[in-house]
Length: 85
Image (cartoon, rainbow, N blue to C red; front, side, top):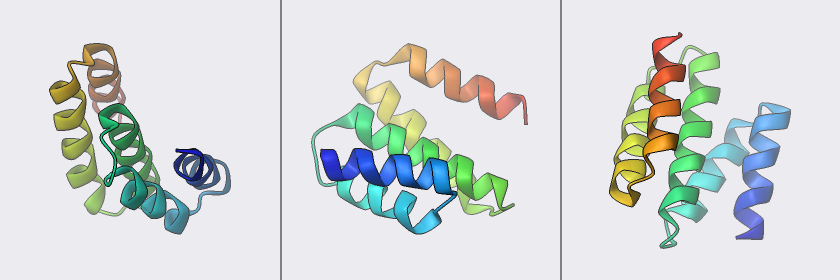
């Protein structure tokens, strides 16, 4: 979990797509749905800032994971952030 958190932070702070992708890869091997969704949402945000159309795919996966975990607050926050773009 520490490696995932580090990769997530590195991706966010340093605008490091490689680290963000690493966080997604690591989180996807766990049962931590919220962490996996957070990693997907962060990667989506980074990709969107680079005008990469792949961002939408990661947003959709993040929403599915939040919904699966019944994390309505995180899902609504992600939906709101997308609608503001």
